[in-house]
Length: 184
Image (cartoon, rainbow, N blue to C red):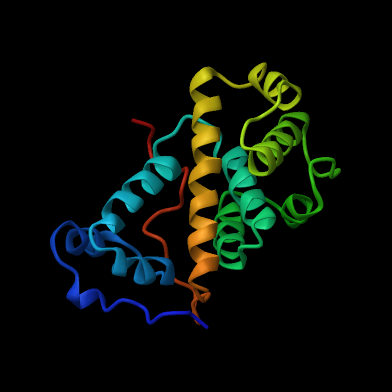
């Protein structure tokens, strides 16, 4: 049960009001309403990560779900496992994210993403041992996108857990599946 009441979206003003016109009715956004116009910036960065990055959407979701697992953020894991499935991730791969980087379900690049994610979450600065192998497979842009994704979802997980955001009683439709929009 949430630690504070969910925000009444009808009371949103300014940029927050405009943001809510486009946002799915997810509890994370309902909770964020207390932050005022920060909901707009939060959503803009999240949307940029989910819809307008170069990194492969499966690699992105592996990192996001892993951040949620390491952060013990149930809501985050639930929502992004759902997105992962929509992108074609099978149950073995999703279970592997919970197991760890050496899970049999992963390709070498996916293992490298998992190792890098674990390293950044646990140590802040990725070591050369996790950075260099991944940098051989990803462009500079993709390396930065992945690092920003990990950092953003660390923040999201901490927000969700601090306020005990509840998983919705009924599934909420997303406006579109993240990673399926044209890159631009």
